[in-house]
Figure 1 (cartoon, rainbow, N blue to C red):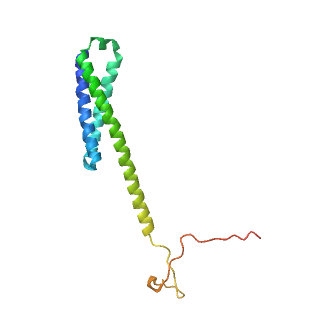
Figure 2: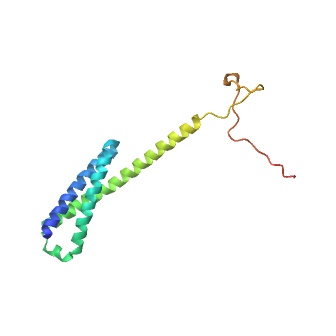
Figure 3: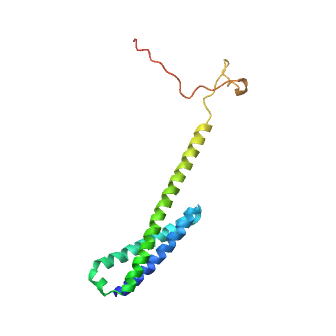
Amino acid sequence: MDINKRLSELIAISGQLADVLEQENAALTRYERGSLPALLEEKTRLGRAYESRMETLGDDPAAMAEADPDLGGRLREIGARVRDLIERNARLLKIAIEANRRVVDLIAEAVKSSAPGPAIYGVRGRKAAAAAGARGAPKSLPITLDRSL
């Protein structure tokens, strides 16, 4: 295949990848989680296509000498744009993961703190009323150990 055609394909794939990364970054910034699965699928597909095209270019370094210099310059420009978008995407994904982890931790803590404690039973074996001032047993009981044995 002609080197200029391969470069043109790589430029087109890079442009599509940049567009998808911009959309995903915007969705992450606006907390629009609904569109992320489709964007992730498209990003993965384009990433694989980009990687395979780059491998074929690396297989024939002598062919780059025959390439149109304008195409090489455009590829470098779009490559720099994609690299910047990938770095921003990684930061936004890290932030989203951390935020989700914190939400899960808060929910777990709320569930844990709202769980009822142990009940107190009266002399007759009935549950004592909380309104009468009865309090549950402490969650961690103090224990002493007699070491004289």
